[in-house]
Amino acid sequence: MRADRLLSLLLLLQNRGRLTAGELAAELEVSVRTVYRDVEALAAAGVPVYADRGPDGGYRLLDGYRTRLTGLNADEADSLFLVGLPGPAAELGLGAELASARLKLLAALPAETGARAERIRERFHLDPGRWFSETSPVPHLGAVADAVWRQHTLRLRYRKWGPADVDRTVRPLGVVLKAGEWYLVAETDDRPRTYRVARILECEPGEPFTRRPGFDLAAFWDGSAGSFQRTMYTETADVLLTEAGARRVRALFAPVQARAVDEAAGPGPDGRIRVALPVESLHHAVGALLGLGPEAEVIGPPELRERVAAAARATADRYG
Image 1 (tube, rainbow, N blue to C red):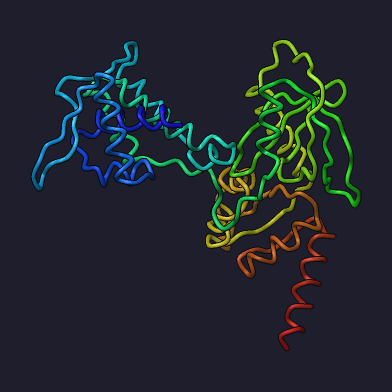
Image 2 (image 1 turned 180 degrees about the vertical axis):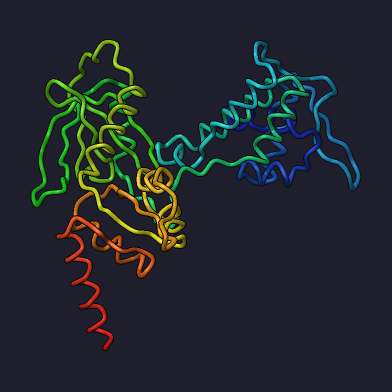
């Protein structure tokens, strides 16, 4: 839309001062000729935009020409720029809107506050993704977010952990970004449930619905996440760890397991730490503890010790 482009051009000049036609064309992704026409349109509309000639020339606004927004102090402006997450916004289909909103906010702030907020953007970056993993594709995120906003039901085909996909009609209440993964919080019967958006195979909007009164998305997520972690680690492994093993658990294992190391008593006579290590199951624990190599020895339960020993012997036999 030309109106949006004209506003963006005006805000660029207001925020950055003098810019050449080439610089403006690059920012707006248009031709230099289009910039010439847009500048003429702004001047015809009464905007005091001027062209300076020479090697240091370019377009600029009359000194002191600014729009202002009252009510934001410097710390409040800083906080707004710290919450910007361009990656997730783009996944939601709001990348261009976020960039435009940031530009408008900068233009509306007083000069000193705007410069401070711009420094925040230049020097701090928030990356919600995880190391050593790729974010799952979320082709239906836009439709999910739209249904949340418009309060329409969703008919889903969803891939569960089990062997069969399921069809469900849900009442969407909110979306959550956690460690680079998107989740849908929605009601299916009498209580909210959580769905991983990347596991939605098909998605079709349905009828309007009345949102659950007083539902607090943040409070629900905190409670749900805490409950999930508590029910996830249902077994305990009695393990002796060397100092190197304890460091690896702190660095590579889940936070609840790292805390168990920190809360353990000091080293014994042989220098090793005895830890009651929470684990998801004995099956999962075998692979995790084998990864620690000789830095860990399983004391109990006996079944786990036998499984780890058998796996270690099989590995040794494989390598001769």
